Amino acid sequence: MMRIRSSAIVMTLYLLFLMIPIYWLVNMSLKTNSEITSTFTLFPDNLTFANYVTILTDPSWYMGYVNSLIYVVMNTVISITVALPAAYAFSRYSFMGDKHLFFWLLTNRMSPPAVFALPFFQLYSSVGLFDTHIAVALAHCLFNVPLAVWILEGFMRGVPKEIDETAYIDGYSFGRFFTRIFMPLIASGIGVAAFFCFMFSWVELLLSRTLTSVYAKSIASTMTRTVSASGMDWGVLAAAGVLTIIPGALVIYFVRNYIAKGFALGRV
Amino acid sequence: MEKTQNNRAWFLVLPVLVIVAFSAVIPLMTVVNYSVNDTFGENEFFWNGLGWFEEMITSDRMHDALGRQVLFSAIILAIEVPLGIFIALNMPKKGFWASFGLVLMALPLLIPFNVVGTIWQIFGRVDIGLLGHALAAIGIDYNYTNDPLDAWITIIVMDVWHWTSLVALLCYAGLQSIPQAYYQAARIDQASRWSVFRFIELPKMAGVLLIAVLLRFMDSFMIYTEPFVVTGGGPGNSTTFLSIDLVKMAVGQFDLGPAAAFSIMYFLVILLVSWAFYTVMTALEKVETK
Image (tube, rainbow over all chains, first blue to last red):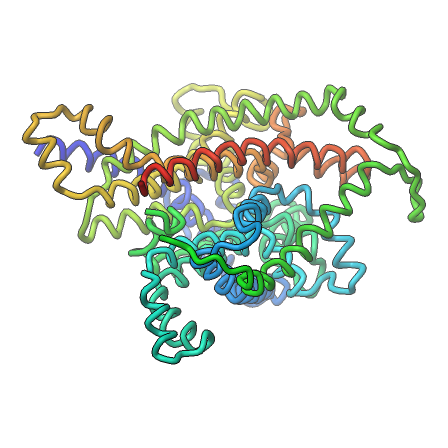
């Protein structure tokens, strides 16, 4: 009984620690700027949604969200599509150089985006992709493809090989076996991998800011630029922050039962 | 699982190779190219050999940034790993509260990096932030924009806030995989709480814990956006970590040669440490499956 109680206290304290800064952001987003700078209150005196209205009615703000979502979804689709066959190969076959290749893929997850920012800028400018959604989606493949391969390989390893062999004996072609039988079996793994691609592409700022300027400008860079230009519009900044948390919260809710296993990259 | 020897598996890996080659190898080669050339603009390059590397290896600026970076990563690991394990041990095992806790804990992980910075900027400021205000109210002189120590503390607390859940979730996944029979056996042997942790839980968590340490090391070593938003590398240079310094050099001052040489050495350090982790990890997996 004592133990249950002490762990409940630990968890409550930890969750409070996590939630208070977020609460403060929400609190700020519901205040007017004059209230933020002049008084100090734990709850908004004059509850206002004006900050949200500003964002949701101004295209230069809300297009940031649309652009971010476009390249994040593109990146997730590309990453999963190319990672699926590769992960299958790594989990089922041994071939020349497989271990080195696997480690080399992982090194890309380890490379600092700061190293790549400038060369990416030049590469995508020279092929005419600068300031397009696909440029950011491809750049994020740098770390998302290796991650997707790693997670999917972990999940595929758990599927017994006898299933493959039985399917081939029954006359399934590789393509039909893969899409009809194998993919449904690792559906939760695909979901987790997609979740992680979504997450890392959504939170990344440096590359998306470097590779876009106007048409494909992401919400992250919209936030940084507008803030510096207008002299700290705290209320709108906080509201924009709150709105970036919502997609993440929705996605977490859907994968909550697989989250722990996913973070262990399928290796539990 | 026994794997079939089949070199045609290369065809399955080909799409990944093409896409990663485009997004990794070509840019990396550009960096290598810059690092051995000097330029006066207009795309004219002159061979500079290893000059930039020598310059960067001996430069105080890089030493300082590297020193701060190593210190930061070390502090982060020293706090987040034990705290993450502790939280994981206290998490409810199943039911509504388990899901509830999981969702709330994962929330900071899905907040864009710059918003994490913004949250802590707003939270910590003395004039409008709850933390800054509360500390001022109890008489602590705290101002992260002026005082290097306060800036460091703010950034470390921010990182703990942001990433401890990752370590905790990984350990939680490891703990979930321990069969109940192990605990029953320990109860029969009248094992203490500590020996249950030391001889049952810790060994079972070793694999995921290594992943956690690896991920936290890599990401803290590359940290850019959060400190950049909160402190901009200041006050002075006190929170200028490697990535911040690199971007300043490459984009701010356009010193391509030194920045490229810097990048390559930076990349090699991370690669080396990660390789060591990876080797230990695969060795560990082999031991487990035997």
